Length: 101
Image (cartoon, rainbow, N blue to C red; front, top):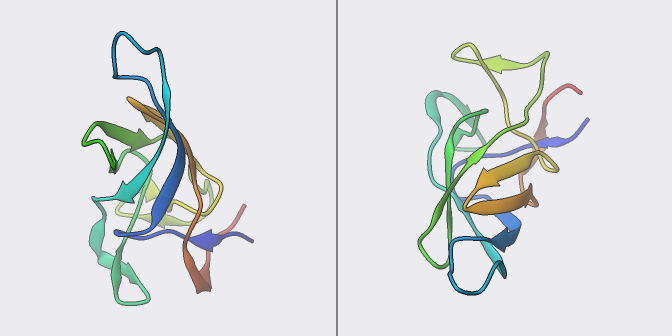
């Protein structure tokens, strides 16, 4: 089972909101989560929570666990996808907290 992701965990991929350049390599943080379902002292990231690129452009977590929920939304995990201006996947999480496949 993958590690769960939290506010302040990282994503990596590209940002496609830099015209006229189509997309540039980018990373950033998860900036939204639920304080009701913390993981390792940080708010739990869930599907539809917001990410931000190092450039300041936003994205959203679009995949998550279908079996482990937090506030009726799937818990985000390492490997889940980010989309919006930011396109990529979550690369860090809480190693002692895992969410189902």
